[in-house]
Image 1 (tube, protein in one colour):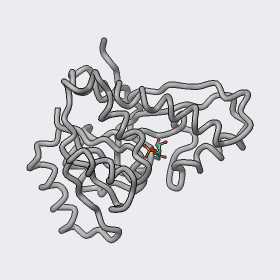
Image 2 (cartoon, rainbow, N blue to C red):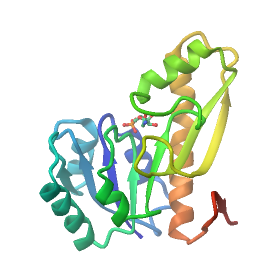
Image 3 (cartoon, rainbow, N blue to C red):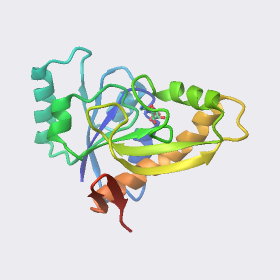
Length: 201
Ligand code: GAR
């Protein structure tokens, strides 16, 4: 299965995908796209000789069309948002319906939406006094963090002393959950029935 991975920052989830042994025979990361040409994730892609595509701040329809044809030319079958912090243009969502997934560092539908990314999420979870947090992989639609939930894993945070500690625990879950879900897509083991998504054995 041909993948495009969208990134904005550190790139630890991209690394987890690229390093995952089980995925090696199932997927090929054909392109890494980012809004930030200088970010660590883009540097990682370049060091692995993976094609990159930089999405400028101001997007017009022509540029989105360019991005779509770039992805189509490479026969991209799944787009994975791995720490991509911008909204996906509606025409891209339409073109890749049920083929764009995102990892979110909390248990949706709580702690999601515009502005809820990275440490903002963990700070909100910490302040909420919640005892569990976790990671969610979901389909991407036209609203931030609102698409159907595919998979979630949770972690006990009852003893944490800071948002940073939550971030660390959640991130280690993310690095397993995202490759697991990608593997299921590659094996055609994801089934959508109405508003629910099933992962088959
Ligand atoms: C990850 O924790 C990811 O869940 C989060 O950004 C981080 C990126 O880390 N994404 C969001 O907050 C999206 N709303 P990484 O660049 O090391 O993979």
